[in-house]
Image (cartoon, rainbow over all chains, first blue to last red; front, side, top):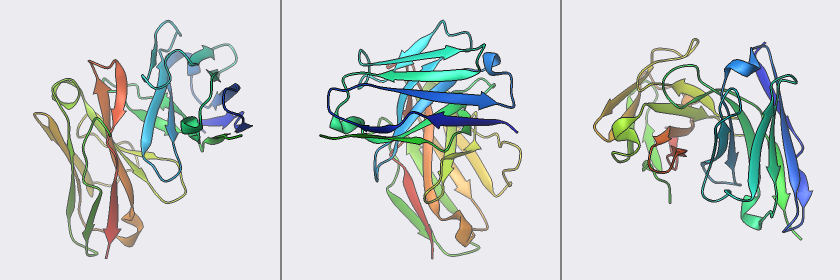
Length: 120
Length: 110
């Protein structure tokens, strides 16, 4: 079964750090780009970051650039998101997703999400 | 403020048809493929449409997508109560070098 499973969420104080992980299974992880998308409580989807299949290319939303870092370990079928300098507005459910294999930018496999709460 | 503009809500009766619009610009919809997601209450999003009008395996043909210029439209026919959900459009923005989403549209099946 093709799936991605996020972990690493939790409660952190403003200014703190957290590292999210995403474990992929059921597909050739190294062949796909991957993405992090978040959703604040009661709000819509919000792109965070994406990474190419080989890890050479990374992209970030303006709101997280310089604070968050995306990476992957193809040998471990894992995606990561290192989050530093966390702010209250980073509170959200963070979804890991597999980039589609077609020409467009889309997520064809979503995880169930991991919750990050930034509060003192 | 989302880069892509969607109506906050739409509604229609069971069995009827509804369309959801998504408006952008030349840096996003105008020059890139559009996708659509369905998010049922309390669940993760699910891909409905990719590359403007293609349906992943398992998505019924009641769902359709189209694009014209800098706008895209999701169509749903034969509405069912199970279609009640939030729907999001998405694409790549070449100016931002980032994925962008619409603000989401809540569908109510009356």
